[in-house]
Amino acid sequence: MSLYTYAAPSQFYRLAGQLTPWFAWSAALLTGVGLYVSFFVAPTDFQQSEAYRIIFIHVPAAWMSMFIYLVMAFWGAIGLAFNTRLSFMMSRALAPTGAMFTVVALWTGAAWGKPMWGAWWVWDARLTSELILLFLYAGIMALWASIDDVRRGDRAGALLTLIGAINIPIIYFSVKWWNTLHQGSTINLTKAPSMAQTMLIGMLLLAVAAWFYTIAVAFIRVRRLILERERQTEWAKDILAKEA
Amino acid sequence: MHRFLLAVLRRDLTLAARRRGDWLIAQFFFVIVASLFPLGVGPEPEMLARIGPGVLWVAATLASLLSLARLFEDDHRDGSLEHMVLSPEPTVLLVLGKALAHWLIYCIPLLLIAPILGIQFNLPPDAILVLEFSLLLGTPILSLLGAVGAALTLGLRGGGVLLTLLILPLYIPALIFGAGAVDGVMAGTGAEAHLSLLGAFMMLSLMIAPWIAASALRVSLE
Image 1 (cartoon, one colour):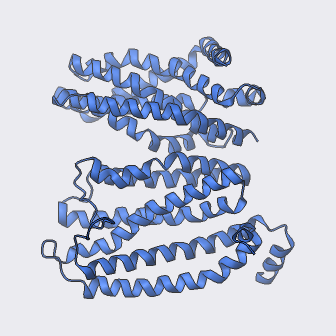
Image 2: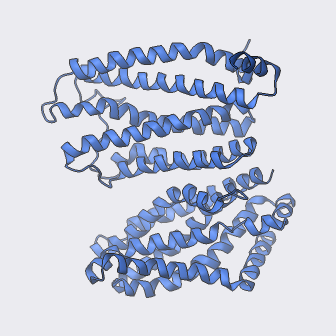
Image 3: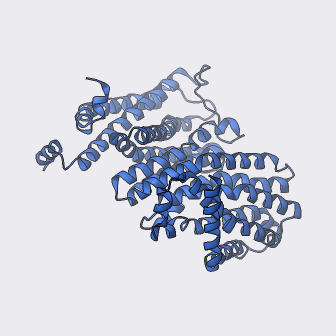
């Protein structure tokens, strides 16, 4: 049995159903531990005092907002290239969560910006490009919503996702390319992070939690999409009959 | 191959020449939107010069969007679009020809009107020159990316509004660099950096947008 077996919606429906509880419970557990470490164990920052703790939510949300978009673009490209139905469904299942994390990143950023910069919002490169990301999510979901034909909607959405993907490197590197008010990244793969160990652990725990949460809700959503689209097949009819 | 491109171009130009009403609406829209700002924010010359470049760029963006919704729509309705896509000629050239025609019909007139509006906004002559140059470099981006949006939303209910939602976020870099170039020359920091980036963005759109728009057109016509 190869991995490609799960490209069949019926197989993937079962696999996703088995995996969802694992990811959901891990996400809940990691969120609990992560929040405890972030808010009770991690030391107070000597410059920003307690307000800095918003980054424990802000940074994972911002990471996920960009990462989910890239995954959507990836599935869109796979779907366009290999004509796999499931890839498009994955892309659709991810979009609402991506938009949610973008809103969380912008919101927490504003809440942090008020005490630190003295402004809820500044039009610097990173904030603006993150806002554009939210618009892109909104545009893609609006396009899906207004195309009734599933096949056309899938493809049109994937093309739009791909063309918007150019924005992701712009967001990510904006703090390097432009002299922005938003600070540079704190965590770096090549050098030691410029933060205390416990702070880093708290942030990474919450990042993994956000990641697992995304997988769990995307699986739940993709299962409903599979059922909706396969409703004329026998196995889907069986499941729907049991649920009804 | 270039004969097909020229044929598409000539056809769209002829059609536009026979329907001057559509053409005039877009130009008047540009003038009216730009004229609303002095009325809305007040007529102080310093402030108008400050906001002028951005306002003119935003107005140009919206004016080009207004006409983009119809880029493929008329040909789609009478069925000629399907025949052009089914023809052995590459769809990429069809899209490129239509985007080029859109640029010549709707964006070049904006370039001619912009200096007059620039004077109304109290822009100095060198800023108007840079504004012209930035519009010359930037408006092809509007036509090219707009072709992608027009192809994606072809024949959808509420396609025009949806097109706006899809395409305006993609226009933002052009707007930032285009208006930034004029701001740069007025602030004395020079416009070269912004114009270079705008040119790079234009080349990038030229390389990518026709292909994506051609795929989108095929998806929409399936």
